[in-house]
Image 1 (cartoon, rainbow, N blue to C red):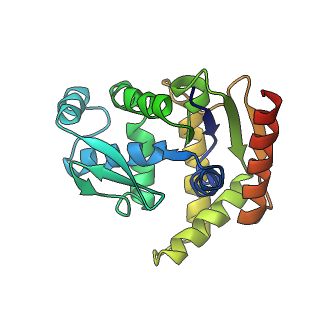
Image 2 (cartoon, one colour):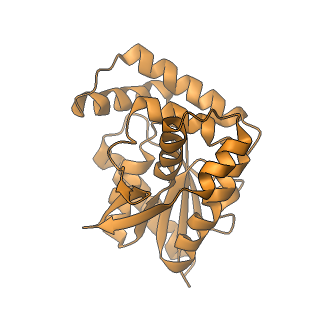
Length: 225
């Protein structure tokens, strides 16, 4: 029987970076569900389909193929056979993903894909509603968070490292707006699962956060043995 670890948390908490490193150390498949939603946002935006245009979204999704491939241990996202792994990592696509991910037809489209991956592999899957909606029976649920200012600083530094122009105050405002939008949406709002373990990485280096999460996972998995 496969092991599934659900990691939820707000934007900029480092879920993807931390989860990817922990997955590699444990030999698990890492599933970045945010990349799936970003890919949907990218294609719908390119087709000039607004988040409220339900019939057009449903039609577009019917003709959309998204798949994950793991190349040299790294997750790559293919949108209609095109690798968009780099293209989806912009601030614009991030904000768009928050809007489109609130649409029930988008969530339904991706739900079966996420559950299929978890059923077939030992996974660490991160997102906004993994423990509450996608994998309600996950082996272990974690809510990974950090203060908004801390998350904004990390996101700001990441953008600069990628060569993108960035302003800290703008990034902080975006983080706070994303928090509000994600936690107040009608469909699958961001919140900890009732049985989730809270992991707060405020003030940590990346290495410290990876160790903190690894320790929590291993301690709790060992309890179940």
